[in-house]
Image 1 (cartoon, rainbow, N blue to C red):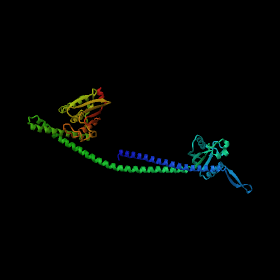
Image 2: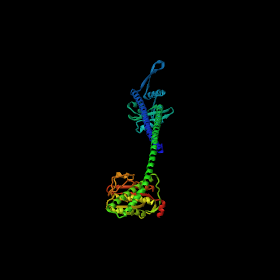
Image 3: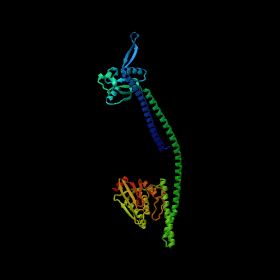
Image 4: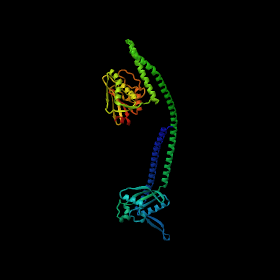
Amino acid sequence: MNKHARNQVLVAGLILLTVISALMLGMAVKQDGMLRRQTYNHAAALHDLVLVARRWNASHGGAYLGHSGPGGKEAFERIGPEAMTREISELARGDALFSFHIASLDPLNPDNAADAWERTALEGFARGEKERAEVSTNGSGLRFRLMKPIYVEQSCLACHAQQGYRVGDVRGGISVSLPYDAVASSLRRNFIGMIVLAVLLLILFVLTLYFLIWRLMESLSQLNSDLASLNETKDRFLGMAAHDLRTPLAGVVGLAQLLQEEPLGPEQRQFVDGILASSERMLSLITDLLDVAKINRGRLDLNLQDADVAPLLSQAAEFIAPIAKKKGIALETKIAADAGSMKLDSKRILQVLDNLLSNAIKYSKAGTTVTIGAERSGGRLSIWVQDQGVGIAEKDLPKLFLEFSQTDSRPTAGEESHGLGLAIAKRLVELHGGTVHASSAPGKGSRFTIELPVSARSRETRR
């Protein structure tokens, strides 16, 4: 498996780990909330039970408990709400089930003095809070504590009227405490279990994905190797065939040109002109095929030399001027004064410009103008060819520079195109470290722009 594929597997694994971790964390938080709510409901039920028992006791003026007095006589002792609550709490605390405590900031009985947590809760009740619940730690471990305020009722005034309370005042609070160690331990075990499960699932997924991609990449690597070999064979055959065909075709072109100089009859001259035109088209195609083969095999070298931009563009315009004039198309140059010079392969840039200018004329009608221009900006040289021709549909722009590509646009005079010129132009510009792009609108013409980086040496030459 190559490095790119391994990185993709790693990224997929990290994304999956993030998703699973988020899900597990969400489940853990939800479970923690459920257990807290369950513990809260338990504590709230105990609080309400104690409160109801206190109300019952207070409504009857206290509870009387019988016990054996002196001489075996039965005696009765009155137990008020606070005493009853305290005794029940001590009994529950002894069995380690739960505990509750009546607390006040101004207690009559010292046993009802609030601890630090209860004091904070009672101060909150004075500010209007309705309850306080949280998990806290004491010497015996974790405890879930719930405290709610005790409001003064009419039955309470029998014992507490002297303290200045009125019905509805907060007299104190009932604090309920439940053991929470077992709940916390269960949460930890469940959370660890979910993490272990998530890691195991992630490892299984990544290993499966890794080996599947490894097998796939092995197959693709073999296919790529076979395709590269076939492509090399194709380019070699194409180069050999084009090279072997170019020599006899060049001879045919030369002989046809010689025949044109001879005195010929109209029919003979027509035949000779046809032979020459066909031979030149074939020779141009073979030359392009040779360039494609060289570029694809990485054997096309540039002869970089300092060259003045303005004369180079003027030369390209002069080469194409007779074709433009024959078709009734005006040819203009707009070369900025600071175009200067730069290091490039003049022959190959002329080849690029010839292709762009030929296409511009090919797709333009008589009476229109084709412009070639250049300017420097931001350390780059921009060269453009603009026409007022038939334009190119937006859907065809992405495939303009592909080999053998065809568009819906048609030459205005039935000229032929084999679809290699722009592909070669793009590769030649890229070999110079530049880019070429096109912008166009149907019926409004096209603009092809070459962007070439200006080297430090070229800027020094220009100065």
